[in-house]
Length: 135
Image 1 (tube, rainbow, N blue to C red):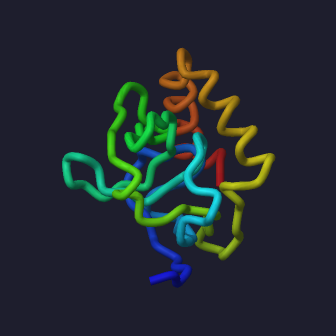
Image 2 (image 1 turned 30 degrees about the horizontal axis):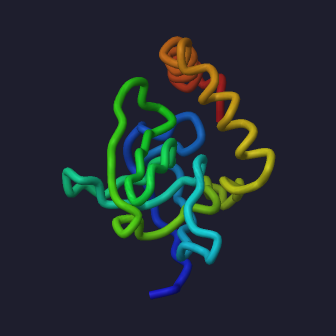
């Protein structure tokens, strides 16, 4: 309805940028410029699941989504199934981090480029969290 909303998230599919059970995402209506590769969106997939994932491919009306923490899983939707864009992440302390800034997009591009070794990086990240070496 055009209102911005802060939505808590669950799951690990967007690690390391969004931590389920801890973070919330700020959702906004899709702007006039539309959807772009690298945007994090709330969408309904063809399997009728609600997901907050990143746009990795656009082919006409067909959108391919991928969670940053997913290694090989991609999901699909149409542009009409995109409900909102996630523009920032808020942690438990209320600190917000942009998902749309130039710096945030650059971090994602590096992360995406590291796809061949992401599995190992995610395992290391999770171990660091288990042993309290990361916020």
